[in-house]
Amino acid sequence: MLPIDDLIRADRDHVWHPFTQQRSWCEELPLVIDHADGTNLYDADGSAYIDGVSSLWCNVHGHRHPAIDQAIRDQLDRVAHSTMLGLTHEPAIELARRLAEITPPGLTRVFYSDSGSAAVEVALKMAYQWWVQRAESQRTGFISLQNAYHGDTLGAVSVGGIETFHSLYRPLLFDTWQARAGDAGHLEQLLVEHGDRVAAVIVEPLIQGAAGMLTMPSGFLARTRELCDEHGVLLICDEVATGFGRTGAMFACEREDVSPDLMCVGKGLTGGYLPLAATLTTEPIYEGFLGRPEELRTFFHGHTFTGNPLACAAGIATLQTFERERTVERSLPKIELLTRLLDERVAPLPGVAEVRQCGLMVGIELHPGDALGNRVTLAARGRGAIIRPLGDVIVLMPAPAMPAADIDRLVAITAASIDEATAGGAGAASVSRGAPLSGAAPLSGAPALSSAAV
Ligand code: PLP
Image 1 (spheres, rainbow, N blue to C red):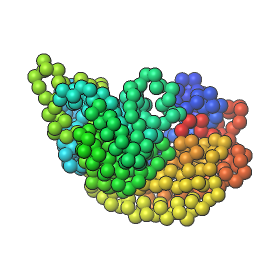
Image 2 (cartoon, rainbow, N blue to C red):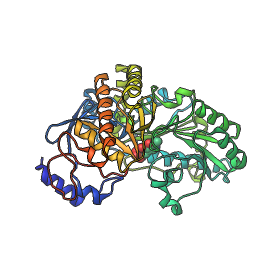
Image 3 (cartoon, helix red, strand yellow):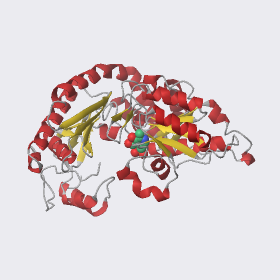
Image 4 (cartoon, rainbow, N blue to C red):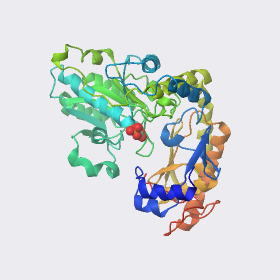
């Protein structure tokens, strides 16, 4: 490995980080992750950090899980990549078969892609094309929810509703009708007014993650399904964040007995190891695309790394590990523990306005303050935990496999960090492993303030 100072210099010279103001980034000292083990990440000095957000909501069984590592190594000895255009391979077939088995009833067909955003694009295009091929080409519209986040590609941004991320791009986007999140009456009103021009309703089931972990009222998802049926409109459930054990069930849809017409999965599909996503759909939708080649009913969509064999092998091992380790079942007492710890240690803090939780997905809304979310994140890093802010909301998303003792420690660090950052303004966010940097950009020393926007 290069000396740490050289690495950081090269990062500043060449790497453009996502959702990050690069000017601030280059003024601060980045944390360089060197390796990981279980649900801990380690920096170049060997300091350990609890991975409190599952490496952006995707790690499930812990890092360097022996079964997933082995599956990828074994697949490497066969083939790392082969296209799904005109060819097929065992890992993609086997993973699709297993996904059809474990997802809500009726979802039998699996279309692979390589990111959650792409899985959403696929769902939107599939829904639209399906209607066109049923001679209903007036159905060009989608109903999405206010505050929705479905990814960063332009179709996904079109059905997004987060001003900070999305408003700039409006001139490039297609129009949608936005229902008030959690308000079934408003959704119904939009369907009554525009239903015959709507291809699909798209929702994040149970909880809107990137909006700041906004939980939906109980029954809203089931009512959304009913309304879609009443108005003859397709339902797309975006389980990219909620899928694979995050909400106390394998998929959030299960919690309200909902089977969508299209379901998007990503992130945890490979245990958070490799980029792989999928859009699942039903036989009627699949059959709507069948025909002679010259009829052009083909779904003309596909990415180079669609169904990559290494990623599919990681996916199969991930699903086998869910079964073998009874991961979802064993996460339930940890979810209860998390609820209790948040109630006892976080909710009563003066800086905390609200704590929202759905399974292992947690949003801690702070009373607004100057870059407060970032300061809490920094303080937590100094205490040995990686957490992330979404504005003034602190997100915790421990992996379903995180040991109870680490969940306890994660909440303790979060509570202490909120206390520290909210107690005395900006200066209060000093950290135990050194102070944040201001102005100058030295190349080594303490972890520093995150410049990321979210
Ligand atoms: N959909 C939801 C609900 C998400 O939370 C995300 C990412 O956080 C996405 C889609 C986009 O996934 P990706 O970042 O893999 O493109």
